[in-house]
Length: 402
Image (tube, rainbow, N blue to C red):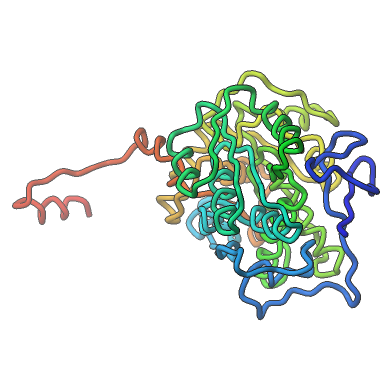
């Protein structure tokens, strides 16, 4: 039996299985850290990510048939980007290498494993795109009846990508924040387990990224970890992953976490800068970064609490800064990520320019959460230079480009 805890209220005796929130204060719930006789170990000889880190997951067993090969994504050193900043240890954790091209697959994999183990047959999610595709794919893999709710106005690309997996796809006209909570209420009535962004089992899956970074850096924690910030579940999962490693004595220094929002939708950055314990929801959203444009992040207050407890930072970057960073990652390092992912480089550049990151040999990790191929609409306006020459003038034309 899994035990749950709330950052504000402490351990809980019971919870509503259809809700990720504490019944006492309404804040997100987490799986309480378990105790394993002899301590927890990382099984580096195992093939699947869930099996390698099984000691740290709330799963009694792992069914490999439910896996799509999630996790174990590359950690790539960004030599040109780092050199330009005077830093020798800038790395990108490329989450676009997951089965549906985003980090969401880690959380979905754990949530679906748990759902199948509990005999749940109907699952669902509320999403702006990435989580829709991920939940639909893993639902199909497990043979579950899957319901995907997207906000009316979601791009046809996102709808088609999720729809190809055969879920029950529903476009909902209404407030996205209200849709999140309404889905939980309706799910309880209809027997649909909505594994939304801050589902406690989903957040457990995000811990795997922390464990992989630890191994890929030679069993060391990085100096800083940069993470795009929307609902807050991904950032909290990563932070709790490194807390697990710290608890087991595997790391001696906890990394500094930097959560990044778009300037056009930054409720948590505003609250952080103002020294507030709780954020104020926004009504006016002005950003191209739709995947992190969350005016009412359900784990927002928990993020503020954990970031402060761990001496982290919250920053906002402009659309121009993230687009420039997206192009730099592609042109300098061969990594084409979503604009939301590129907020990580934009934030690193801000901190480096301010002299807040200056020791050359530290390890700084940018978590690139998804592939740029998920936002084809932005490519239509992307500036590119094309040199046109006739076939008979090709040699001279190429020579002029040297």
